[in-house]
Image (tube, rainbow, N blue to C red; front, side, top):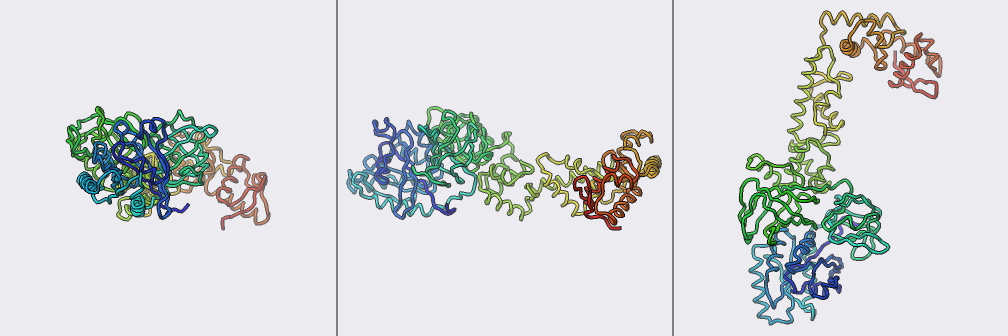
Length: 637
């Protein structure tokens, strides 16, 4: 499927019995009222869906939402994924209460495009329709529909249907093509069981793609299941992509384990949250102010939860005001940065405002803190600011994790990170990214840790790699640590000394007593030669404590005066060089070498000879073939 294929979802909105369902039926030929009660009462109770072939051939998905006040929650479930809305007004009744509430909801959700549709025009005089149109224009002034076109139609006679179809196509073509390359995300608005098929869910695919055979995760409950079949507009397809109405047949999932409001997504990408940071706006028509920790009904995607609104910079939020708040949810849902939501008062239920998610997984904030509010405003200001703050919060993180936290596609995340890198605000450390401030702090930590290690270990050649990495946050990966270390070494602030890291000026300086002990150890290994005992036996023979032994052996190894074959086996450097020469001499005359042959040549015990040959293997001097060894990259004389 082409990445640039245009998919559009059209939605209806308006007062009960103003002709929304009849209009969709006239345009598409499909009756979206499917429930027996809907047919009996003549009103839509739940969501209805239909495909609509536009004049140019594009097939749009249509979501018909209920208009009755009692079913506003169902309306909110369907409106979230809509690209273009038809605000339907019966010319015989004009603007009514649900017309206003739906308009408020659409404006708060920032639906991209809209058309005003005056219905039942066959039942009214032209002059009256003009008056109603003027009334609607006054109502939508200052909203996203202020400059929207107006269509006059009759679903009964068919007048105006061609005009509205052309208007829809013109508007639809101006909408941006959705990026289908991100993780797959589909909020569930319906779920049911079909005999012989199992569980089926439907929804609008907000991002990504889905194919039959894909493994997907359902949140809640968190089950990972296989997609048995994908349908778009009732037809089986190989693949569906962002912007389409989709039905998925899920294998191995009991319908009782899912509910409307759950999300189907790419496994291990999405997480549920019980707290969001958000920009909340109260409608000027809200009946009363909002107090700290007032409960509200929150609608996000197809989910509905109760949230407690924590006002962070005030005690009271007046109607018409906007503020950054933290909302604590009574049960988890899947949220992404930039998701729009609606809030309704707890009781009686009426729409009082809406907003935009700034951070779907924030830490708990203390109130009335200037630095916290400034950080949240920075977070709100744009994608780069959000990613930079998340880099700071996460300390070290991957592009995939930032993609999850931000709700942005991989390309947009990487583009923003590159810009932050060019501005000197972020750095890539192989498989991870970090904020420049964190990087500067880590550089200081590594230098300081090295200095302190030198002070406490005057005979050690430097601090071991593993010990040095331990001073950084656990989230820093081994690859990221090695990259950071290389940067500091390249800057000349630290140096590598084999297995150790040291300050450039560092040189171990043993005192006279230590110098005598070191010479005693070295002399013993020189004297023992090829027959040197294991390390523990040598320590006992020389009357050294374990602490002294660790320090002394590390020093002699770093100085190159002892060669470490294993943790327990050492040779004096001169004896080791004799062994290397024996190896060269042997392969000058022979094709292969056995352990027994080298034991006879070197004159040592089998255990020491085995350690020595395995050491040669590790250096690629030799290569083992069965029970023999052959020359590989012998050192030159």
